[in-house]
Amino acid sequence: MDQPENQFEHAPAYSAPLPQQQDVPVEPARMNWFQRLVGVLLSPTETFTDVNRKPTIIAPIIVVVILVLATVSLINWKISPYIDEIMRAQIKKQVERQGATVSEEQLQQQLQIAKTINKFTPIIGAAFVPIIYLIIAGLFALGMMMIQAKTTFKRIYSVVLWTFAGIGIISNIIFWGVLLMKDDEGLRTMDVQDPTAMVPTNLGALLGSGVSPAIKALAGSMDIISFWTIAVLSIGLAAVSGSKKIKPGKTAVIVIGFWLIYVLGKMGLAVLRG
Image (cartoon, rainbow, N blue to C red):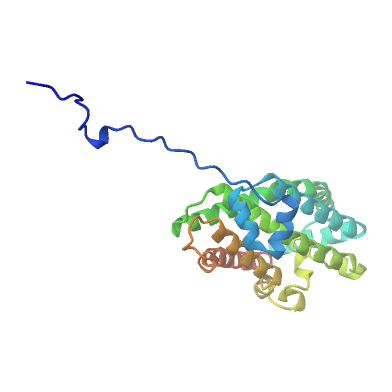
C-alpha cells in the first residue's frame, strides 16, 4: 500500500504548536510623588488610576511619618510649660475612675514615668502610624474580596497611604493653626489624648464640657475631614478594583461600614475613660 506523500498533512489541529503567551507590559506611572499628593486633593479619580498603574508605598509613608513627627513635636512644645499640671490632672482622673487614692509620692513616680514616655511619643507615633494604615488596608482588602474585586493588597495599601498623606496635610495645617492660637487656659485644659477634638471641622468642638463622653465622641466623629476621607478612599478603592462594574458607591459601603465600627468603638472607649 502506498503511503501518502506527507503523513502529517492531515494531522489534527491540536498537534500544532501553541503560540507562547506574551507578558503584558506594565504601564508606567504618569505622576510623580508630588503630583499624586496634590492630585489626591484635586483630582482623586485620575490620581488613583495612576496608582493602579504603579502602586507606591515608600513616598506616602515618608509624608505621613513627617506629619506625625511635626504634629506631636508641636504639641509637646506648646504644652511643655504646663506638662506637669496636665499630666497630674490625667493621673488623678484615672485613679479616681478606679475608685482608688494616690499619695503625693506615688503621684510623683507616675508623673516621672509619664514624662519619660512622652519624650518618645514622636518616635512611637511615627513608627505605629504606617502599621495602623496597614491594618486599615487589611480590613479594606477583606471588604474588596467580598465584592469580588480583582486587585492586590499593595494597591489597596497604596490608596490608603496616599489618601491619608494628602488629606493629612490639610487636616494637620488646620490643627497647627488652632494649636498655635490657643491661649494659656486653652492649653492647660486641652485633652492631650484627643487633641483633634478642639479642631473646628467637627461638631465636638462646638459642645460644652457638660456633654456625656459618648455624645462628645460621636459629635467629634461628625467631621468634614472624615467625610472627605471617606469619599476619597471610596474613589481610590474603586479605581484599583480591577472591575468597571465596581463604582465608588459600592466601595463606599465598605469604607462607611468600617468607619461606623470605628465610631462605635470610639464612643465605647470614651465611656470607659469617663
